[in-house]
Image 1 (cartoon, rainbow, N blue to C red):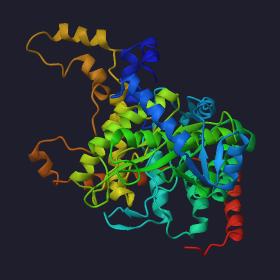
Image 2: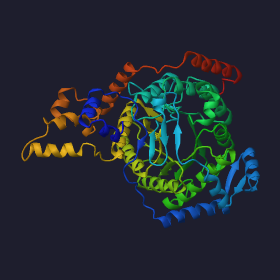
Image 3: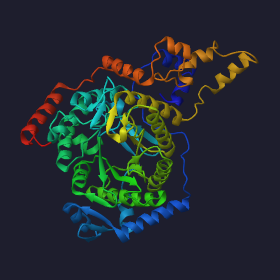
Image 4: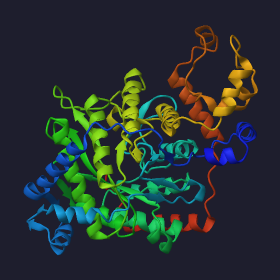
Length: 510
């Protein structure tokens, strides 16, 4: 409920009703009310834009896909083999048709969300082959583990999507995984979700399932699923990713055009030139999305890491990553395109202090950068090699805290609170005042998973540290989980589709 609506409905009384009828439903899309962190001047934005356009015109980008090459020839790009060079006016004309906002439709209309122009959502991590389970053990992921993560995403108020392959279901054949991953995303949550983009055909299979869930006509006019398209930096888009891009864009479903940046390894070892290259890569794919279907929604994306010059290992939470996020945010807003970044990243091997510091540093930078599609927001550890169940719920709560911060200051009880100052006067306290009683649950965020009691009380209650508290919370949530109803005929049709595809697709490829 908005603050404007609350004020119209009677201030104190409506806040008391909210306090006594707490429901942990999903938070709406975050509406930003804090200023952006913007280190670039307008002149520097234009300088990066010019540098990116020069890369596109003079160096070009490899589109290693015959269909894309023919598409580029059709619209007048300069094609030499796989190398495509673009006139900057062509690029800018194409990206101008990308919508500046996207409404993502969930099967539960209460869970529709919007991104772009100050609206943001949080999406869990994906892609982990390993997990840390309910006992804190690191092991391969399974389909049952994937189900657990989708349930946790469904139950986390600040998480707006069930994503897709949060962990790899290693007990499913590789060639069938995209089917079961999609089904789990759909069945265990009624929030929006992501589609597997591991090939063009897999993307088409996902779209078939999406049409079963929503209806073909609805899908063509309503974005309901997102897909990530990774580039091969420097300056390459391959056939697998471009085929997946077409599978989603042709059906009017948004893709995240994401160069895979390892700063210093596949970009220059300098932040501003790295952003110029990344920007050129992203713009080339965004432009291609409009060649495929003009006006289709698309998202300026990236995966952003820097590389240790000592070991070659990717790093997270570094100052340069924060600076690049700030700059990329400015460039995306310059083109008026919604943009994606990665959240709560880190290289820690366990849920330890390193994991906390890296994730917190990244989270704060992401919030100040103004990203719209905030991916990898829960569970990420070990450079994405494992998803940690304990960290998942702590990260989700951190996202709720970041959500509250980025909403900005609340003014709706300003007069009532100042009246309390007059009531209390010098030397008093506010604990028993009616304003405090009405507002204590919403005045200050109270984390459930952090312990702020005295040392003695903490010790008397067993000295439980954050990982064990979080695992207890996961177990509690799983006991409380109620699967959102899915119409029986739709569920049956989805399962029949999976069974049919399993017969058609060889399942022994590992």
